[in-house]
Image 1 (cartoon, rainbow, N blue to C red):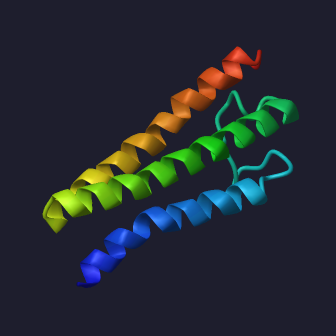
Image 2 (image 1 turned 180 degrees about the vertical axis):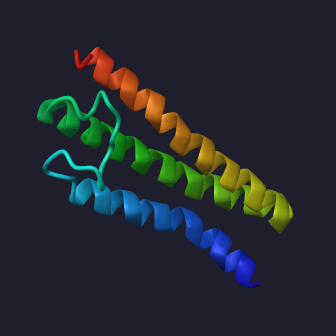
Length: 110
């Protein structure tokens, strides 16, 4: 039963974290907090653009993870549901990186 609660808390926890990142974005380029890639750290404008886009994409992935959790939980055994929703979350979070980089490139931050 504990595993079920932990599983069902993962998506909402990610939604809360993405909301916190969106509400309190890093103001200045720093090595600790924010979307940190060479392209995003070249200028303050690129930094702001990358962090705005990334947090929005992170929020979308988190909400979709909640939906995937509910659907897979209702259709599959718990172990399979955990694998599918966790896999969806990991793939989604990894996909945010190239999407943000493409967004920066499209906005002219080379």
